[in-house]
Structure formats: structure tokens, C-alpha cells
Figure 1 (cartoon, rainbow, N blue to C red):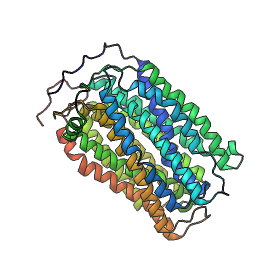
Figure 2: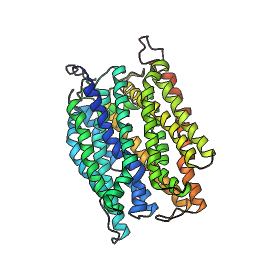
Figure 3: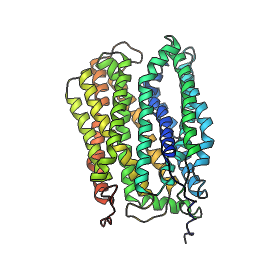
Figure 4: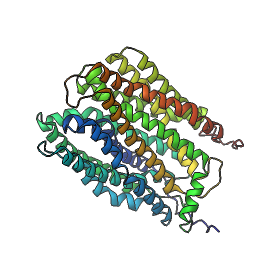
Length: 455
């Protein structure tokens, strides 16, 4: 029999400082996520000169540790006492995360055997994945633990997505120019110095939510067995479908962002600095989308807005693939894509928090830590699987690492990985996976006070 729920911690007012501090946390995480998403494969193949097949294997192998550590962190959070579930883990994980961020981009001497360089890179990236997973799982769980109120969760999710977008914007604009400036033409040295600066900035940003945010929501007692937690979570259809949709869209985003630099260099035949500006355009439009997400959700409901935005994002990419490969066409298409993603992101995390506390109309134990951990693991698995699959597509297409030009077959593979594959994955997420979430979602509008319809 389930033990009685612990008392909710004493409430305190959620002010603007706490909302902003929470958003700063995701800014820090997305600085690193954006670097890994857009530049990690490029760094290993074009700067460290590792074979593209080896990089694909590295991205898959490094995630193996997270398959164990992330769920363990989630269970640990669920078993903690109310009011001290996620914050202690976030605080303790900041310094190790900072150190590993800097170490992953340390120079690998070209004189070392390629197997040794690949092994060192794999170990370093694996350790970073574990550190990222520990801190990020704790941070994600706080979306559910700071407040039970749906409107406040939407504000927190919006602040989180604004912070995440600013982090991505900073990465897209600053990375390659700063690397070239710090390294004086030596990009290995430039990346190493740049990442030391990045590690310090990210550490400061993560300190803000660890200092100013508070846990106010109590979850179920730690006496619930792990098996019961997993069973309750898997019975939550809303969480399953949202996590599946996020997996597909993250897989698509991994293809798009991972292939962007290659597409600019070898298909559009432009400078790789242009890729940074295109990433900046996406980030600015994501920011604009976050700004209109809340009023759209208030008018039409969170789940319908998420589904429509996901379908629109996939449709934009599909049209872009059918159009001629030109910089202006690519820029306009990515701007529209970013707007759609920005509209989706806040409502997505709000819906997740809603489903995790039973608000989706399904019963089950509260498994906040485990739910966020497995959701985060799915997203990161999509990142590494997507990176590995993209590397496989590039290898099959005949991409030659470090070459000044690529064959027409390689260019076709790059362009398909950049636009066609993401378009299909986004359309699957919106058209198939999220279809039933819209029908099941009881929140007709954010500010609605009416009783939810039956599910």
C-alpha cells in the first residue's frame, strides 16, 4: 500500500528574480547543447581530422553510460525528502560539469595514432554526457517542483525557452569568430581556449537557479518501489506520447543542425561563418516564437498549439528541400522553422510537467525525477543516434574529412540530411504521435477555469 504523501514545503512567492534565474539555467545548458549539436561532429572531423565513421561510433558509444546514470539520478530525486529533491544535485554537479566542458575540447595532437585520439575523445565525451545528464535531470525536474500552478509552469517554461534560445544564439554567433580570434588561425588551440571561457560562463549561469529557485511541490513518498514507479510512469499515455514526439523532433534537429555547416560549405559553397549567422537567425526566430507561444496557448490550448507548430516546422523544411539550394532560400526557410519551434517549446515543457503530476487525466504514482530523467535520456539518445546516423549518411555519400570540395553524391547526401530527413521526422511527430495528445489534453486554454472534458 502506498504511503501517505509528504507535506508540501512552506510556500513562498515566486518573483521575477526566480523566474529569470530559472531561465538562466537553460541558457547555460543550451550553450553546451548548441555547441555539441552544431559543432561537435564538425570539430572532430574537420579540425581533429578523425574519420567520419569513427565519429559516428563515438557518438553512439558515449551515450551508453547515460542510459544507466540518468534513470538512477531520477530515482534518487524521487526518493529524496520534499523540498530537497533536485536542488542539492544541481548544486553539486556544477563544478564537475564545468571541468569536463573544458576538457572535451582540449587539443588532440595529430601525431598520436588515430585510434588513441578516438579513444581519448570518446572517454572525454562520455564523461561530459554523464555530468550533463546529472545536472540537467535535476534542473528539468524543477519545472515540476517549483510550482504546481499551470500558468506559473507556462511562465517558467517560457523563461526556460527564452534562456535556451539566447544560449543558442550566443553559440551560433560567437563560436567560430571567437575560436579563430583566440587561436590566431589554429582552430584546435582556439577551441580549447574558447571552451575554458564557455565553462566559466556556464558555471555562473547554472549557479543562478541553484541559488534563487526553490522547491515547493512535494511528490510521493520514497517508499514506493522502483518497479511501481516505472509501471506508473509507463501507464501515463500523455507522457509516453510527448516523449516520443520529443525524440522524433530532437532526432530531426540533430540532422538539421549537424549537417548545417557541411551544407553551407559544400552545397551552398560559402564560408562556414555563414552557418553561424544562419544559426543566429534560427535562434532569433525561436525567441520570437517563445514570445507568442503563451497568448496562442491561452487562445487555442497548449496541446493543439504544439501539434500545429510541429507540423508547420516539418512542412517548412519539406518545401525548402524542394526549392533551389541558395543562401537566401535557406535563410528564409530556417527563419520560419525557428519561429515554429519557438512556439512549440514552452507549451511542450508545460504539457510534460502537467502529465507528470497526473494532470493528463491518467492515474499513477508521481515519478517526477524518473519521468524527467527518461525524457532527457530519450532526447539525448536522439541526439547521439541522430549524430551517428548523420555520420553514416555522410560516409555512405562519400564525404571526405578535411577536403576542400565534395562530390555531387556527397552534396546530395548532405542536403538530404540537412532538410529532407528532419522534415519527415517533424511531420511524423506532429501528424502521428501528437494526434492523440491533442484529443486527450484537458487544458483547453491556459487561463481557462472550466472543468476539463472527459478523456
